[in-house]
Amino acid sequence: MAAPRFGLMAHQVFWNEQGSIVCACCHIPFPGSDTWVWEKWQEITPADMAIIDRKGVRVACEGCGKEPSRIVR
Ligand SMILES: [Zn+2]
Image (cartoon, rainbow, N blue to C red; front, side, top):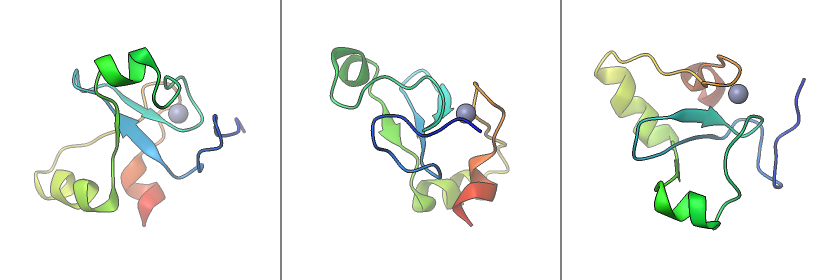
């Protein structure tokens, strides 16, 4: 198993303005870096995930296919 990067937690999942979804173990930019800021990366919080779930949208990490809705719960 890949380890989370940058001291993040393995259950954390992030997305950016373009709708890319990447878990903490995959290729997310360094938090606070230029790429992070320009692409507007944010953590998908459990509250965000509840909203996404209600819309019936499936989200999964682009790197490993992990589904955050299963990680958060
Ligand atoms: Zn991943």
